[in-house]
Image (cartoon, rainbow, N blue to C red; front, side, top):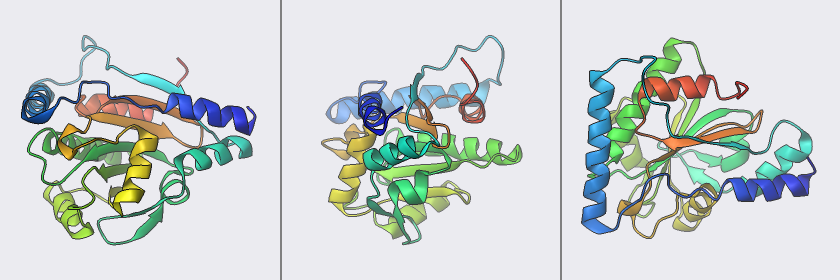
Amino acid sequence: MRPGAALAALALALSLASLAPAGDGANGASDQAKDASDQAKDVRDRGPGAGDRAPRTERMKVGGAARGDDAAAEKYFTNTELIDQHGRSHRFYGGLLRGRKVLINFAFTSCKGACPTMTANLARVQELLRARGKRVTILTITVDPENDTPAALKQYAARFKAGDGWYFLTGTPANVATVLQRLGGQTRRPDEHTMTLLLGDTSTGMWLKTLATERPETLAYLAEHINDPQ
């Protein structure tokens, strides 16, 4: 694919609207929390089985290892500077995405809705993948950069026992807004954020979009098999 064509496909594929309504105000946040809580109970109560429903996903081919495709992906995602929970600076595409298999979600530390459930769910996903010897990077990007300092994110990460390779990211409001806009995670208010989870393998250009509240066994499976032929 020509770089220009790859970039056009990228922009189209990553107009990432939420898979579920974000909701407005307290009622929307309450609905999100109830949905997340119900799914979390399902995760606890049931093991994986052949009869489980298929996860709701969208599949995209974005970028890849070819020089032109990688350059187009870099141009789209940008190398905007973000700061992790340890105060370390990273270029978004070049430092966190290129050549990696990644899971990306959106949250904020003072969230009283779905964020704790999503984060606990992803902690279980990380645990499952590490037990299988799989190396996957997780990126949790704050939707509240004005309040989510690296110190606040570090405390939040510790609360959920996040392991190595999980970056909780903040930065200047402008920089965070740039990245959120590229990923479809930008909101008017933090409590309107989506429960979207993006799974990508930037070495192949394969991406999936689903919900961060899907069963952890399902998400681990999707991460492992993202490049399987459909």
